Length: 400
Image 1: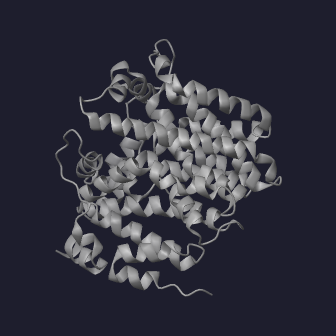
Image 2: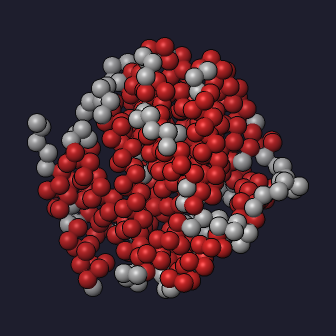
Image 3: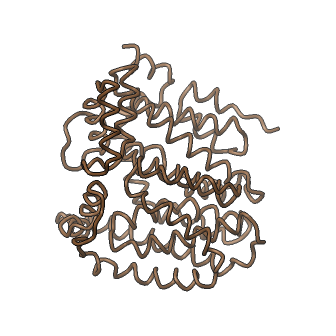
């Protein structure tokens, strides 16, 4: 067995432990190091209480923690009761529940983000296990790049924990249903709207994929149509849900997603040339992934019928849905990013590290602007102390 000192290096520096772990993710110890890295990230996640334009979304969650950490058991039960009546405007209960549970133990918001990181990382690494257990997975540069694509929904996204945690939970359900053939996990997926309301559509999507993904030629055609449609989706973005009876909480979220002013804000610049550079890179990265999906579709017959091929078919279904859902940019865009993990899995299953390597090598350059923003965002919520031994972080954020 290949030796791995990633856990030892983690106690010297989480960053060193992370780099060492990424070199050999087939080892359980390496994945344990990634889990520790995520927990340390959550513990060190630091935001203030004042929300201004351009600030981290995590500020809103800290505000929610400060608001709900003191809930009594009776107050929390009343909140749950009102939520399940679907007429109070409460869209989900994940953050309130985590704030309530953490608040039983501590008033320190660092514990709150530690708990968010724990749940996020648990489901993320459960999904990663399916990826690294594939026979085509090696410790090559190509596979490491594909791992990065698979983990694009990374630990920084506890900054927007509700949707992105629900994403990993949803992918976990997907692998359980379509790879392990455990259909009862559809019941677990029904609970996902309690984490983020937009996942009300996810159980339906899973059922569509379960019964219809086998019609591969149909989904190939639909994907191509949806890709073309996504270029013009903004022209169809302004529609009203008036006259459609929905529970108040869901209607409130839907109204926000389809509100004309909110959608226009996504497509208009603030007068900065840098904004348009960002938009250009965003468009390039999306369409490059679309191209990779098309490449997968063209080579689909290379995969033997079985769980892996089923997962690839489901990926095509979700990509098609995400493209059509671009009429609501926030919804379509998020589900498209959710699908990155399945795109990476499909490329691994089809080509491994022996075909189309150059297309994979291009990915870091395509994602240059995204990586720049990720670095910028991470440094906004972490300071230099994060690269030091985690013992320093424990002393700083818990003891002192």
